[in-house]
Length: 289
Image 1: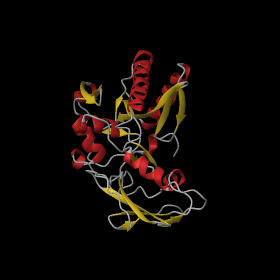
Image 2 (image 1 turned 45 degrees about the vertical axis):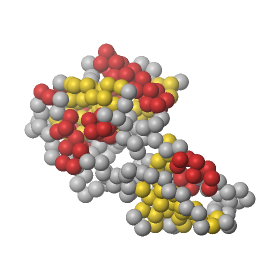
Image 3 (image 1 turned 180 degrees about the vertical axis):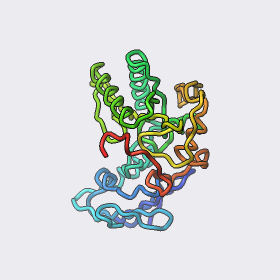
């Protein structure tokens, strides 16, 4: 029975696949305890006479339709491809897919940062709106001075001048229309938009925020800690390192991160999920309710 171990500093899941000539095992860094939908992993890794089992902390994780083991059919095994991807620093992202880590994907970083700068300038010049990194991108900049290894996107946000959720929502629609007029491609979701530029790689997630009539900070998606109160520090920025780049974050970024993730934001939490019982949000400002 052969076994290969690959060192990881964070929590890992154990993938075991049974072949005619024995069992092979390998450790893969885990994004979240909630990453249980591993259909994509199954699609791109092993086939042909292999049985794949995935465990986290001794507990089998469902792969497809709730099963903890998956039998692949076909003539040729692709288990070697799975091991090769893991050796090449592929990680399981928050969608349960085996993908290259953005921490090592410098092409993705450069292309996405270029798109962020383009978006930032467009909204500053055309609508006097300041866009800055948010959620996991802000967290990476402040805590790691780099991208978070298991993240897979670039989150941004702006602060609306309105306090009424209906007006905030309408303004966001106008922002999307303006970006389209500037050549961007927009896919609007309930709480944010995916922003792309045709012919250019990369995608930016654009969220929106505002202060309610009591001057507490509201965000279009979700948060897990105490709401921050409006201060001048929301509108004054400092630069933080994000890999090879410098990005602006509000002077009170730590307070914002406490609202977004709770008091423990400064410690990595591979099991974090926005679906926790602590989740709070304001659905009245979302595009669809």
